[in-house]
Length: 228
Image (tube, rainbow, N blue to C red; front, side):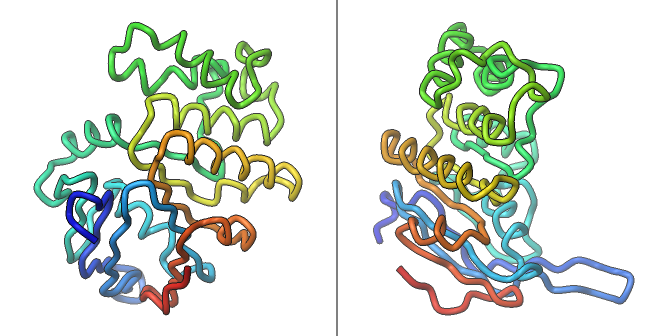
């Protein structure tokens, strides 16, 4: 895999934290490369380090050891403010608990990434994104007026509205029933294909993981044998 085709790279990533019973190693020597436009599912039992790894790859936290390169930028060389600017420009997020702001309606929630960039067309693009996920008639509704599946579709619209290079998703179907989760999964991969976005997700959903081009199993903070 050549350097110009790599969207995300991690080399010998470890994460160690101090706990009440001493030092705890959450990740130990994790290395991976993800090509532009690729899709990768990080899987494993609870406590295996999946969500910690996702946060490190996205620049939300720093590893105890190792190097992460995101869209050609070495995260080690960036301070917190610079990492935040990089995420706003290049990264989208979808979370299990949706993370919508309750005081904002659907359209305003989707506008947020564009507002942070100072985009004059934020409202227009947010309306288009909500129409793409089938919520054009619900754009003025607040999160508490939406079902779980609708809230996750708003979160997807928000994640894709600024056309990020990389999308990180942490259990995107975890709070949804099977049918609604399948529908959200269909939408997630449709948007991924349309925008050629690199997709990295954490999931316990075997059907969702099977739709990714690659599976990265974690076991006790280490990579087990990768499958495709």
